[in-house]
Length: 159
Image 1 (cartoon, one colour):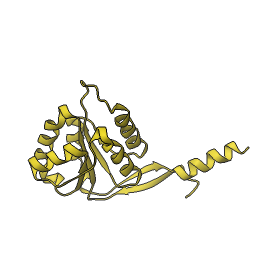
Image 2 (image 1 turned 60 degrees about the vertical axis):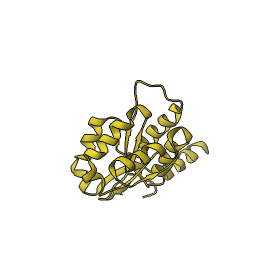
Image 3 (image 1 turned 90 degrees about the vertical axis):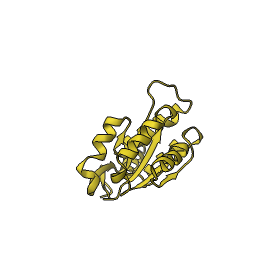
Image 4 (image 1 turned 135 degrees about the vertical axis):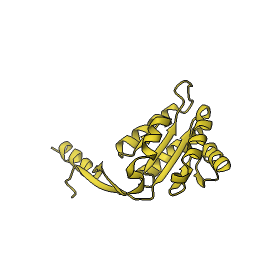
């Protein structure tokens, strides 16, 4: 399969979900988590610093905390996506407030897209994802075969 353009990965029945929210959206994400607690408690949850701690405090859901977003938490989540350790991202971003770590946020959005990870950036999209039939079953998705891509690029440069 080394020459294949894509590799198929399986997202397991138990999802690894990253929960992130800008300061102005934290309450909305906490409320959303409380509303969907029954579903979320069946999955592994992680998130950026303050958001993770607040969700645990207000909902009782266990959420593994990484650094806060401005201190590298978004990049930590992105690295976990690359490592295959995150299957879904719920990121309530604040479209009306400038963020000092906006390049990190854009990098996270890009890496989720590159690795074909479902990502919600508002409540209605998160509602659609959390109520999807795929939340209760395995899901196969295709990711770019980076090894084949690199080999093709090296080959084209050596000509």
